[in-house]
Amino acid sequence: MERVITYGTYDLLHYGHIHLLRRARALGDYLVVALSTDEFNKVEKNKICYFSYEQRKLLLESIRYVDLVVPETCWEQKITDIKKYEITTFTMGDDWVGKFDFLQEHGCKVEYLPRTPEISSTQIKHDFGENNN
Image 1: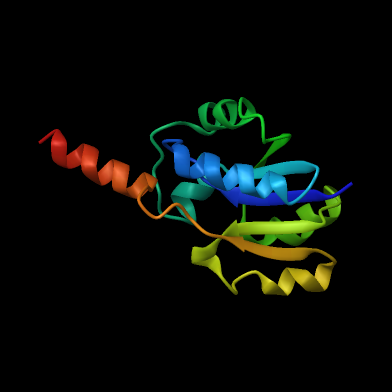
Image 2: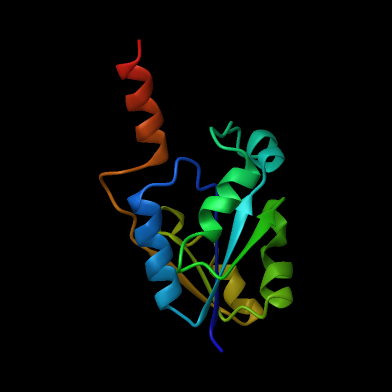
């Protein structure tokens, strides 16, 4: 079985996220999404999410391409996750190109998928803020 993993915050879920998850799932038979916890987002990523971890997890679990959602609590857990979930392919958006190539040394392929250029959670937050002033 080909098992794929991807990571992210997935706040303000939008069609760009769905496109990414669909393409990630197409790389294998089983998709694990490591979802950044609220604490990890706040402390390490300097992000405050609109939706809580549990709400974002519920949304991701309702998407047919996603088989399992697990918490992402630190940057360093990727190697552990690859072993724990028997991952054959690691994938991220192409804004991370080259950053995770070292994971190939741990027995999995690394794929960078193109983002949907006209949409992002950051842009949604920005647009919403501008339209409500």
